Amino acid sequence: MAPDNRIAICPGSYDPVTNGHLDVIERASAIFDEVVVAVVNLSVRKSKALFGIDERIAFIQEATAHHGNVVVEPFSTLVVDFARKRGAKAVVKGLRAISDFEYEFEMNQLNRLQAPDIESLYLMASPKYSFISSSGIKELATFGGKIDGLVPPRVAERLQEELSR
Image (cartoon, rainbow, N blue to C red):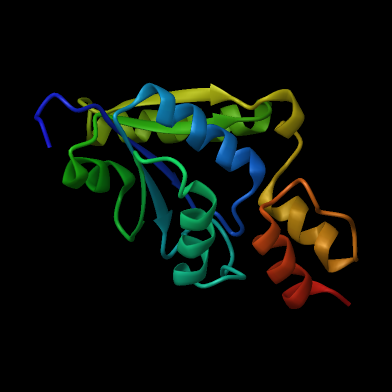
């Protein structure tokens, strides 16, 4: 890989990956030479994942296979340490609402203290995905709600298997 390649990290728990996540990943892949979808193995702020790390990675790999510059990897460190390890100079996240901004603003400040050389970039959610969250998807699936078009087909299938009452 040439030293001038522009690499970005798109970190998250992706439990499960949604079409909103995939929209941000796709848009980032049009801007950067390589996008590393970094799937957190053990989240500190979230409860235990519904899907294991291998299955979450497989969902994303299947959904992004048509992008030649997207790779998916697990991580269990500070996101800026993972970014440095991968040679990334940017962390890309999606923003849906004010509540996302408040959390991401705090994380940006903490990341800047740790790694001032790594930029945080935010893509506003596309309007058709601005209401989608992994937790909302899981709640819909738990109560038999319709999730087609909100997540990839394989994810919808597995959620129905895991959560349907």
